[in-house]
Amino acid sequence: MKRAPPTILDVAKLAKVAVGTVSNVLNGKVPVSDSRRRRVQKAIEKLGYTQNILATGLRRRRTPMVGVCVPHTSVAYFSALVDAFEEVGADRGYKIIQVLTRLDPAQELDRVQALLHYHVAGLILVPSIQPDRTLKALARSGTPVVIIDRPTGTNIFDEVTFDNRGAMFDVARRLIALGHRRIVLIVQQPKLSTTRLRIRGLREAVAEAGDSAAALIVQCGPDEITLTSRLASLMREANPPTAFVAANNTIAAWLMRALRSLKVDFPGDVSVMAFGEPEWADLVTPRLSVVRQPTGEIARMAWELLIRRMNDEKTPIRHVELKAEIIMRDSVASNPPRATADPKVTRR
Image 1 (cartoon, helix red, strand yellow):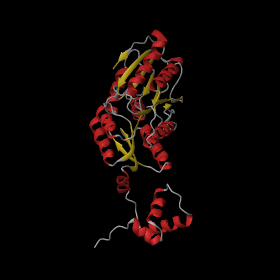
Image 2 (tube, rainbow, N blue to C red):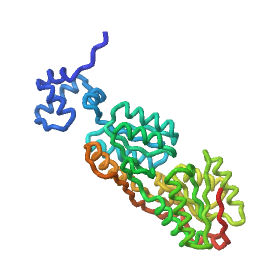
Image 3 (spheres, helix red, strand yellow):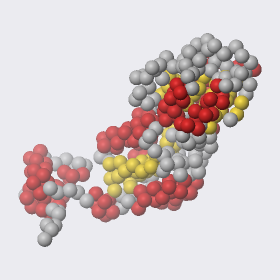
Image 4 (cartoon, rainbow, N blue to C red):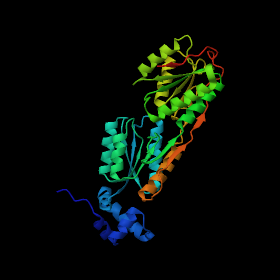
């Protein structure tokens, strides 16, 4: 017959302490003497006891768990965010439950509702393209929530983002100063709030430069093959672009492979930059220029706001916008060979 798992009562009996002492050792919120702590830990190890966190949380109405909901982790930026939340959460005694939405509003709502069923103490969300149903469900639940990365245009929850418009504006200005006149922003989801802000920043920088510069917005499609085809068409034009900015590290990898397959030299013929900094950015040749997002700062600020909400602090809703850092490396060149050609504004 299968043996019943050990309980907290078994641990207390073996350690010769009160059940409350075991609970204090497990939760780490009330000081326990070193000798009692060692006895409890030895008993836990000997019995193979594991705490039922869900049951404990249900008794308290909240578990020591925080949900982190992101689109996916194939993009280095989102993966780094999850890692950062794991670190800051552990420092506060919380565990992280990560779920993925795949940019699908229906899947986003399903995953968020699952987290709510587990009575998470709080939730951090990178919204999908159409997050309205999810935001309404969260507002009804009363669960503390902080929105990160993508501004929602609402004043329902605290939000921590970075200045996408300003970052793209500064990138475009630098490229124009280096002699680039036809600048392409390659995006995958043009309706995302962050993408719209980047498009705005690019167009503002080009407008500032007057008729000497042009902005092109290219939707890369679902895969590398589609992007390669669109780049081939662009590069066959009489006045091809001289600078590409990829919206994330996945698109950057597609872009670099596509340019190589088309035998387009970079940075000789075109310059390349990317939002986000993949681990391989300074390992490839040429080293990739990037917009380094303030991942750690976003995580720390979002966590501080979430802690305040979990502690029921009645403070005004905050929208925090942080600054990104532009890192110029070898993949961007000055005085591009086609920069003197007459630019034409193109949208693809």
